[in-house]
Length: 74
Image (cartoon, rainbow, N blue to C red; front, side, top):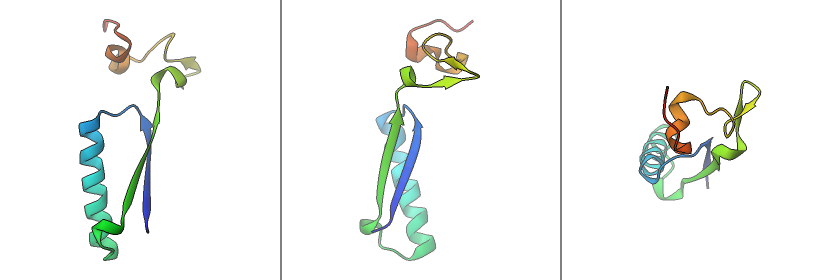
């Protein structure tokens, strides 16, 4: 049973669905493992538990993520 783990900041359900489909298809094509034997796991990171450039996102979210914090983009 091959397992693919995707570690990322928060992803929407539709993004997870697309990633799972694409990674499973590609892995199956390259290894000849049947798709129903491939598992995909998502390890998500809540934005309130992440930092960049030494600063917590909740204090200073990057512009591309401000919508997640209900802040306007400058």
